[in-house]
Picture 1 (cartoon, rainbow, N blue to C red):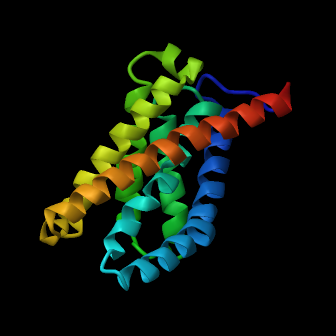
Picture 2 (cartoon, rainbow, N blue to C red):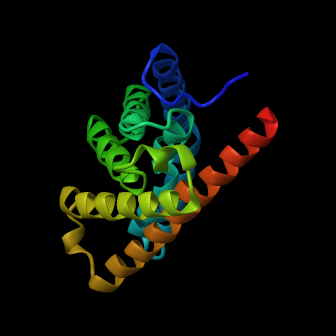
Length: 188
């Protein structure tokens, strides 16, 4: 039976690696095509950049999943960075920049759980939501500068920020919590 691993050891490393690899494949072959289709459709309405944020929470999911299976400091950072690395290696459309984005997303997702080890063990709604919000803010600021979002109209930026915030909470917190509850139920 698979159980949560609360300290760094070989089993924890293998769990994080599996999560990173699985999520990297899902990012590349499931989320990226959905994103590309939506962005293509929204471009006809002049709202293509909105797709960046509508789907953003999907790309943040490896970190909280990693923190669930290995509830210790650094697991989210490593899990999300590894998922981003796998996505890049399989031909992700953002290239090597994906790794930097993954590291930022993983690190800021951990804010909801940091600094106390007990927060990783409890894996509460509050920790997940705070992590998702922090991750969204950090990723939004980073993308603002990396991708020249300063050229967008303020109204579009506000719409993007709100869409990303909703996406982060829905996918990075709520969906991940539901997935982990299903896992708990299956393992009971």
